[in-house]
Amino acid sequence: MNNPDNIPAISVIVPIYNAETTLSRCLDSLIDQTFRDYELILVNDGSTDQSIHICHQYASTHSFISVIDKQNGGVSAARNAGMERAKGKFITFTDADDEVTTHYLSTFISLIDHHDLCMQSFIQIDPSGNLTTTCLTEQTCTTQNEMAEVIIEAYYQDIPISACSNLFRRDIIERHHLRFDENIHVCEDADFVLRYIPHCQSVLVTSQANYKYYSPSHHKTYKEPHALRTSLKLIADTQALTDDNTLQKALRGLYLDWCIEELLHYTLNKEALSLAAQFGQLCQPYLSESKRPSFRHRLFKRVCTSNNPRTILATAKMVMGLYHFLQILTLRNLKPSSKA
Image (cartoon, rainbow, N blue to C red):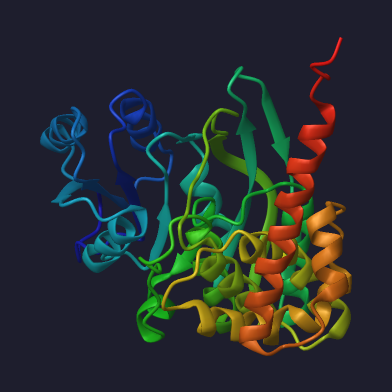
């Protein structure tokens, strides 16, 4: 590091939880960068495997690597801990089961200039090892509408709206007190990015892809007990990006089906009325925009005509009650007759 002020240009934050099988691959790729003015912050989030020992091994031989060892709190808490320590002018993130090319950081630095956010494209690797490079359209966005269109493009190209592959300005993060929401455990990346973008005057999007994202196995499932809260928050995030009706409709469509599905399966708790009220405001007037063809979705869209929270919850319960009743009838009719 040749920085007389000991302030690196980039802080790279790696949240780590039980990643002993992939961590060395990730760290080796981050060490092998053509751009050298950066710090690497490893945040061990209460791993129970050998991850912390691997972190200390790398830190002992590389002065630009530091280690935070904390109790388990989830990926958002780990990233927040990393941001608290970060000294760089810019911040980016890498997940411990992914890796980057040698030009990952140099691409950012060559492009960021006066922009507030730089978004790279993705190399996706499936569980069989097949590589797919998905590229965003090269552009500079200077209006919220243009930035909203980038989010729509990424979504429909199956490019994750991720904290990884993006370079953020630390002064914007600190000025607006931006942190990852530790109460959500899926799509926390999208939530952070969508709350960061409204503070940008200029966003640069490049088709260059230097982040290697390893897609999870098809057998891996995510069970988020607060998914309704998360999906509603993402709709609110996207709607705040633009006041253009066409773009709002497109953005709302990204998470509307998810919201309806989570509401239908929602287990009532003390948040119920609050979340139903949000659903009534953000989703109920736009149910016709949902394209999911399932019977329960179509029935809910037809009978949910009120934005009253109690009525919405009662309607969801009624729809799922009828849905399960019809399932039982169908299964009974499919059973072979016991008569000769």
